[in-house]
Length: 174
Image (cartoon, rainbow, N blue to C red; front, side, top):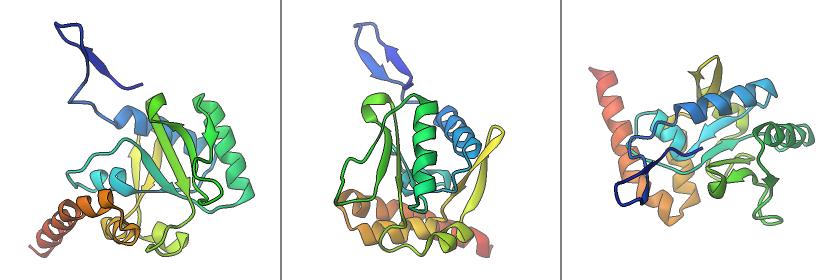
């Protein structure tokens, strides 16, 4: 699934100009098809909001219900990827695929530092990919979530996210 380039030394290198749109179109289509109500958070959401960040996965917040777990099973099956709980029982995170599959989708209940799902969704924006859409969290909510998580990789991303937000707010004032 990840575009690769083979150079003249027959070494494989990842394409530095890779575009995530095909991934996002497929993800949006399958989430919409199965009716999973989810909000994209994390660096993927931040990148879609204009922040200069990158990621290897797509993180979503969902309601942790039996029905949604069934939907996740059907989504994983349609994508031909495994569904597992990598941090069970410590975490309620569900993962479809993984970096070894070229696609990793993480689904979790509202995380520390973020509001309830309904509030997170109310602040999000529907972004179209092909004929489907993904709800993308507001950059302020992404920043709140990263501050609350307080992991080194989240703290490292904060200056870029905060600078992007400040620039966007300055542009709104003009």
